[in-house]
Amino acid sequence: MLRPKLPDAPAPPVSNIVSTHPGHTPVPSVGRSLAPWAGAVVAVTVIGVVLTALLAAVAVSAVSVAIAAVVLRSLVNGANKH
View 1 (cartoon, helix red, strand yellow):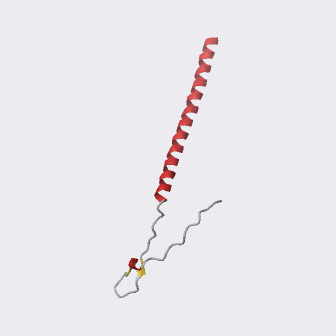
View 2: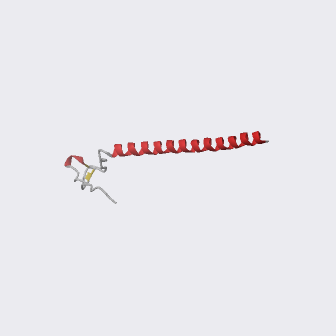
View 3: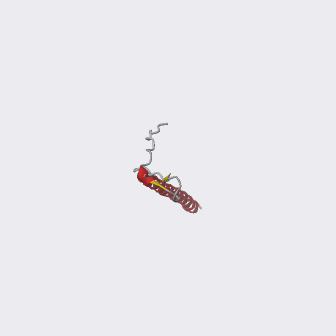
């Protein structure tokens, strides 16, 4: 659907060029810095997953209590009629 347009990765600065062995051609250092908001995205995702799991646990517990109440009520009503 909607995708943000990310800027192209800039060329590595000259200070990042390191030589793997003396006398060989220098190789640019490997690695790319994550976007500054990547940590926030991970945090929001983790919090969303945790809250969703808690909400699901509360819903399952509520349904279980409701079913137990209906069964208990039917047992009490059945015992009063006999």
